[in-house]
Image 1 (cartoon, rainbow, N blue to C red):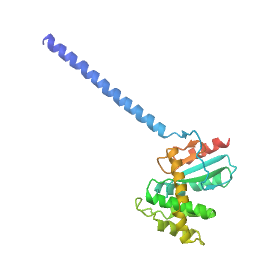
Image 2: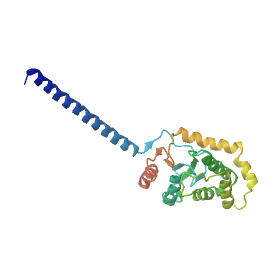
Image 3: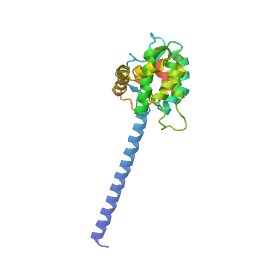
Image 4: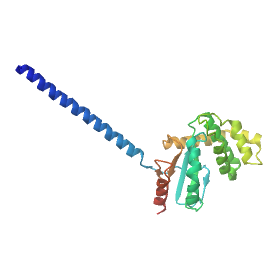
Length: 230
């Protein structure tokens, strides 16, 4: 074998080792980046300030040290599920005991149907504030479970739920209020609030200045509340 051939083989071997090392390094880096992202996604986010609950429906003792805010969408199946699974325990442990308040902010990720729900809820809150939470639950109860993308939340459906929830509701007046500039302003206030806090999924739960990474992790929610009660 000539010296030139030997040199070519050695050079080829070195290049192969080098390329292999580079590929391995890239794979390792991708794994590290992926794991770091997953770890970051699983961590609560500390906020510069707590979301304002002024002009929002609020349940609980106004003097409570902890403010819990849900950013939700009446068209969102996960919000409905959260309300059926996490909320009852949260209400029992912290709202009914006077340790925390709970506020709801409308999100419109499903466009006009979400806006219909938001305007109806704002109208109920303005005209029948004592009936707001009953309407809130009833509207989520109406959400279909079989077709998540079904456009069910029309203006008529919102009015139908309001009439069923509020016996003395004046339908004509209620529809007028829903379409008023005042209700649009309240809806836009909610929109500005979720945009300010970069809410990109529903439900999003914030506890004072902490945004919970997983809204279905009740242990994490409880830990954040307890930390603020100390």
